[in-house]
Image 1 (cartoon, rainbow, N blue to C red):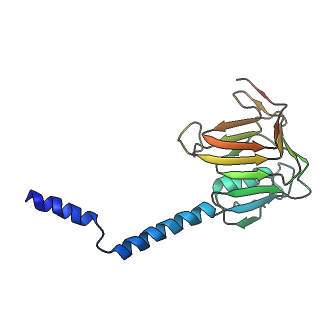
Image 2: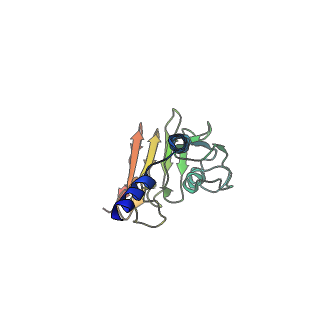
Image 3: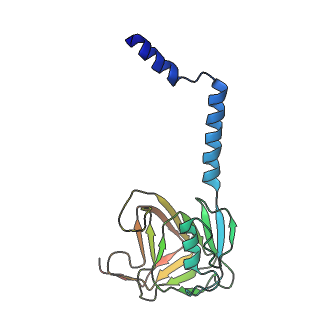
Length: 187
């Protein structure tokens, strides 16, 4: 009796149809590949932080939510794992004064497009908090977020904790051609 049970388990573990197994493997691989290349681009059209047009905060909020927030930002493509935020010509190269910390919780690339753009927290809080924990409260989880910041100056940040200019938590964050200066933190 015991031999039959072992034999039955082995038989159930093997696929009786190799073509069916191959097709299932191919379908899973295609689904994973589609997720990996899914990306949207959002262009910031306002250097204010007041909810008009598409502000940097609204673009980040859209990426964080993974769906259109109906906040004035036009999304080109499907939001996914490799989204990009850029700045229109009138905003790139200017100073964006924020009304508090910009919180990034999802993978994104923020690129100023060849000209340095300044993000100034105006002493209200830290400039950017990259929170890769995958949850709305601090701290939790072990989620991995990929963030790239290119041609940005982060200034005017003030934090009672660490990272007046930028604080990175459970994330891989890359700054290229960027400056973090003029910020303060207690820790």
